[in-house]
Image (cartoon, rainbow, N blue to C red; front, side):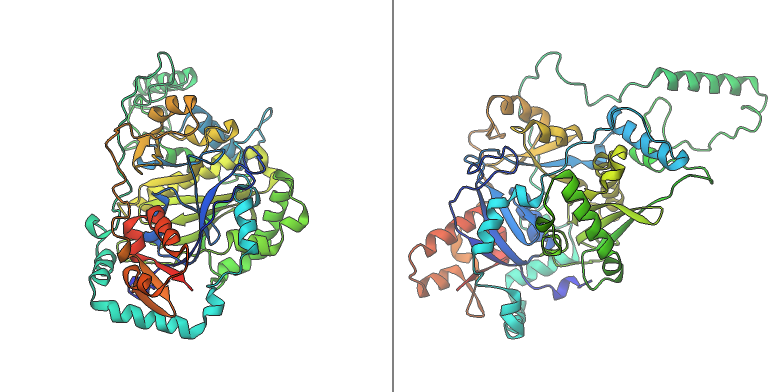
Length: 515
């Protein structure tokens, strides 16, 4: 992986546009509206700051819904993984997997899974159609080695500048929030709304235990009292139980419960970096692609010509994120990865994720429809939450699991709100608000400002556009200098719109390509 010190700045090309497109959720032919840009390269810190302002990527295309105008407002949602407790339905999914692995047992009855994200072609169909028509003026292949070298020279020239010093301080210590642009992901605010009487469970209390579990516990205690050694013959009490009495099992205990030696199946989860230079990624690519085609055709009813290798690689095997492996980061480093689920030597599911300074961000999941009875959508989400908690042990600031967008106006997409505790991002002030406090407002209006302080403003907003960084004719210069050389009609409006959407910190770090 690349070292942090050698990283080039993010390079993006912003598309100014006010067109409406087909919505992948309500199927409105002209209801979806979003801003977009093409990310030729991007640092993980810049992308972290962007998703904390409502952006999301699909391959190299990074888009932000126009929340107050799009037909189905899409609110960024994150789960506080360290406080997460699996619900009763989550536990059923985990037990179902354990029974299948241990005994090959397939649960009878309804095996409904939570709905998946719509395919890339649906979710950003209009935006991708626009991209296909555009002749991108800035392509890394077209840039050539000479431009890359000029970029490197410019970065070296700026090595003594304040901005480079800030970048180096970020590399050396992620604890210094003042050097992190927007710093810790936007703080959560409590919006005081009166809960509706009788609605919802008390999330501060542990879930009730089943009567069967209580009976088993009583029987075990009775046997221990009858035995002079403090337990029945052959019984060995654990020295230090992982869970306290009357406490529910942790997510990790439920996932990694021991299996018998003669278990029917073996499940292995492998983390593979998204890189055609990685041998494990390359060796599993053919099998992974075949699984993707099978999933798209069966679950999303895509015709074969719409789920070819070009779509697959562009959507799920290409990422603008530059891999980083700082000493105080997770062992696997930061960047884009495929989390492959191998069952008995065969891939049955792939979770595409981004590992960022403060979170694991879920990008997409595709799985073998033949194993739908295992509820792989729910199971993989629970594994990714557990993985986030694992990464937190090494990288203490990494503690959130981002689930993409929550779409309240589309009932089948509300399932993401079942992973509690979770927060929604206010689309105006970019602070996090507990989802319980957002739902009453969303019942009344599909677009909501969650921050109810009327005086609150976007703290990360663009305050000085002249400091925005521009890449123009192989040179890096502030927008204040660039605009003196340009007299193109509409140029200033496009740049100011870009600055307002990405915020001051990103506008000063990322390079905006201009021709």
